Amino acid sequence: MVSEKGLTFASKQTNILISNIGRFFNEGRFVGIQERREREKQITRQAILTAALTIAKCNGWGALTIRKVAEQIEYSPPMVYEYFASKEAMLLELAHEGFDQLRVAMMKADRSTDDSEVRLYNVAFAYWDFAITNPELYHLMHGSGATSLDKAVLMSSIEKVSAISQTALVAWAEHNAIDHGNAARATELLWCLLHGFVTLHLLKRIAGDETEIKTLLEHALHSQMIAWKTTQQMV
Image (cartoon, rainbow, N blue to C red; front, side, top):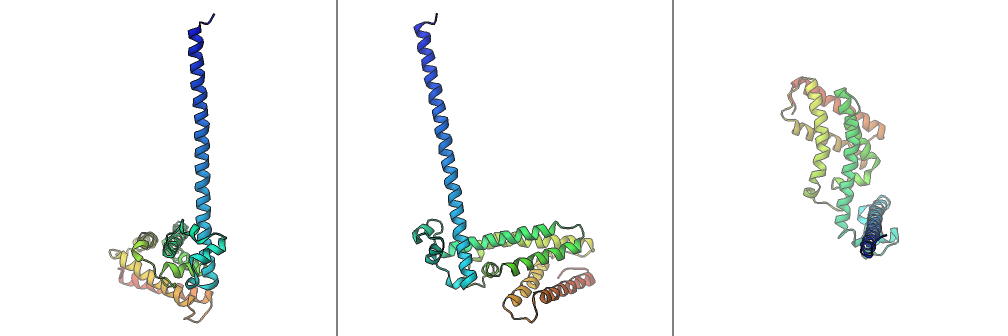
């Protein structure tokens, strides 16, 4: 026979267990709600950025306003301000996303082959392809849109892209026994070539269609590589 004291103890333990179970489910439900809210915030944030880019594609960056973004996603302007403190903050986020997309594309090209020369061409063409496919975003990333962004804020994103180009360039130089002590400057020269061709083509300042200009870019890259091979040093 169980004593009254034993029953009381068992009852207390049962109550503690029930309380713990209830707290577990409540905490789990709270975490679930928090996760769902966070996902919803991310979805809304991305919708705002997508709307901003859509407006720029249709009417240019100069036409972009917080109010127009709000109208695009059927929100009120104050709701948009809850995610981005200003138009510049929104544009900076888009530029960061652009550099990240470019970095991923160039990294994929960097890993595409063991042939250092083909690899270097692939990295360069990944840059070209991204810019031609995303002209509005490319203009924004490089300050040629209606709004000039703070370069210092974007520097970390820019350096990550530059590092991929430099890695491919150094690998090619080592394969060809070329002094790459000044690889950073050589990378800037490569960037000048790429950005120059891309910008001239996007602004229609150079004759020829996309295929012709890309071929011309390939010739320019080839000529520069021959020059480095001839002097056995970069820049």
